[in-house]
Length: 236
Image (tube, rainbow, N blue to C red; front, side):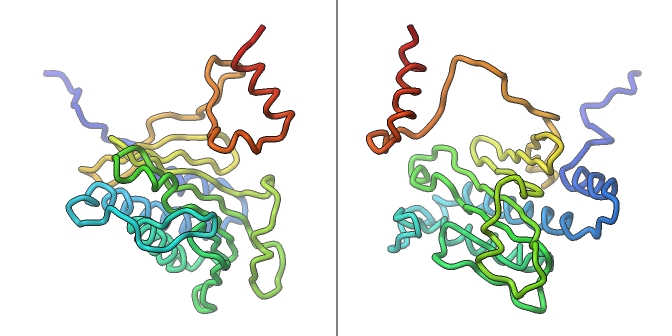
């Protein structure tokens, strides 16, 4: 009989992946690992909520608008609370910045850590009612000063990001994550409740035939950007 089975016995889960990455960093305290694992827990909970939204009457608007002027959906509110609570309970954050709140959120002193997290708990939530894919976006920075945490701690350049990623909720739930050494993709196995590595070191081709952006406000684009897009759409 063959020894092969349809099941992987040494699968690389995202939790294991993050732990292994952390162990390779000299002087690592495990705080970033705690933070990422807490974010993953929030993502799993949001994934479950998205799948059950219709049955749980979570479609529709909550009656408010967020800081960018978008109508807040019921799932926005739930997702925002899930991410905030999970991140603060990781004991690794000091400042949270979310699209759903006008002001930065300071983690209570007894739960504070050294990381700043900026996130959109449910991007594309206007697509919820028609079951189009939606996602969670996040970026993590390290607090640079010993001063009391404030909104200023989030005002750092992109090159200071220590980890970033997104979750995409569709026919399956996918997480793309980078800690500075490439991008890896993981798919949620609903039976295991774990994210499993499916694509390692993902790269964008230097040149392709597709461009993707939101042109809803194209009339407000900088002239140079408009000219660039025209050349891409109608190459000579």
